[in-house]
Image 1 (tube, rainbow, N blue to C red):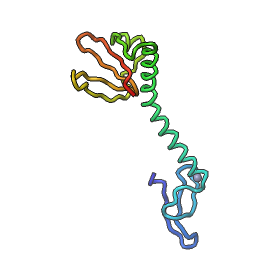
Image 2: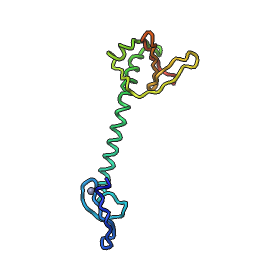
Image 3: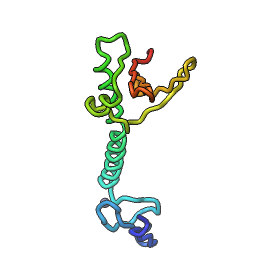
Image 4: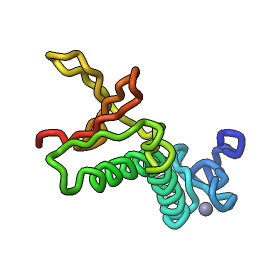
Length: 136
Ligand SMILES: [Zn+2]
């Protein structure tokens, strides 16, 4: 955005000539003043916050989708369920791109992927998935 700054100092105006990056109004102000008015500054802040929320939603959306899926699959169970990987991915709506963390079970060395309060383990030989609710 530096190409739209004018940065000409005037002793008469008592500041620098600038161009507002939001509305393109030319105004005079301190060297570090970016916007012509409070409304333009607010608009820029709101636009940034909106774009930050949208980018957060891109990652939390798929994660929360998987968490809701696991919650419904585990409803009425003792806290774990097994399902074929193929079924989980193709008919249940599991999103494998959702953000997750992983941990290894201390005794067995089993690799688990964590989604919120749930964890998932894939048996690579049988392609059967165990989904369990983690202890709170
Ligand atoms: Zn402006």
